[in-house]
Amino acid sequence: MKINVIASGEDSLEIELEGEGRGFANFVKDKLMGDEKVLFASCIMTHPTIGWPRITVRTKGEKPAKALLRAVAKAAKEIKAFGDGFKKASKKKTK
Image 1 (spheres, helix red, strand yellow):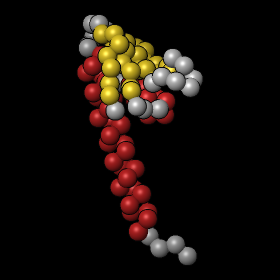
Image 2 (cartoon, helix red, strand yellow; image 1 turned 90 degrees about the vertical axis):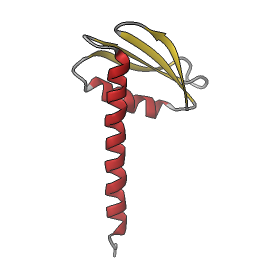
Image 3 (cartoon, helix red, strand yellow; image 1 turned 90 degrees about the horizontal axis):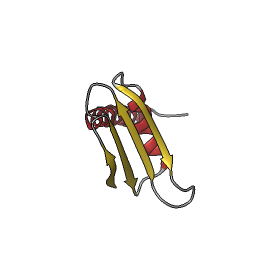
Image 4 (cartoon, one colour; image 1 turned 180 degrees about the vertical axis):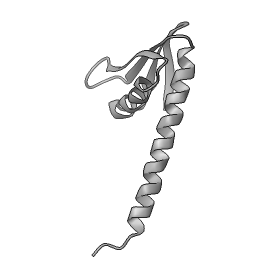
């Protein structure tokens, strides 16, 4: 995945996730929306069949990159928990 910074300011950030789909971008956006310092987060596709998803985030009281890094850390933790849960479930014998 290549991340392109489209716009960056004191309280806003827009990035493009080259090589990714809308699902991953929406997952990250949902984690951003759970952060109390995030005023706004969105995921858009500039075209339905070509192009890459863009995440836009606006924050209050901190740099948006910091909020994005927290969101990514939270997403990674949830993905790990899912993987661990699946490993445990797949070891159980089904009849």
